[in-house]
Length: 99
Image (cartoon, rainbow, N blue to C red; front, side):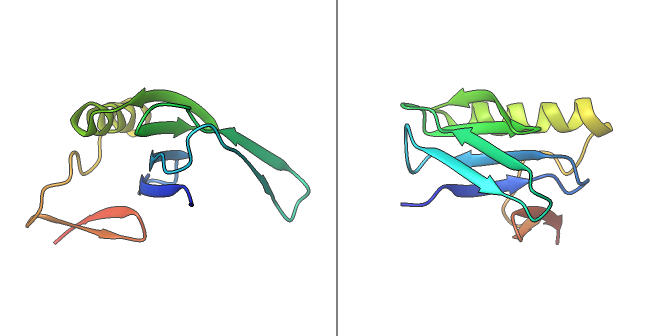
């Protein structure tokens, strides 16, 4: 199974919301500049929120984790599109856009 990225920041911040499809796994990503990033997935939560490479929130509840994502967007850049609303937003490359 693969890790499922659900949302990422439209403002360029390293803020990502994932669905945990591989609980307890450790993933390492190597970049062309030689840097390495390691992320250890939670062992029991369905969703988790990552900011600057570190997990900052875990939850089994979608509403809770999506609200944490929106709150972090408010903290970092004064807001964004907010919670996804079907019929008002679309998901394009894991970034929410207004229709």
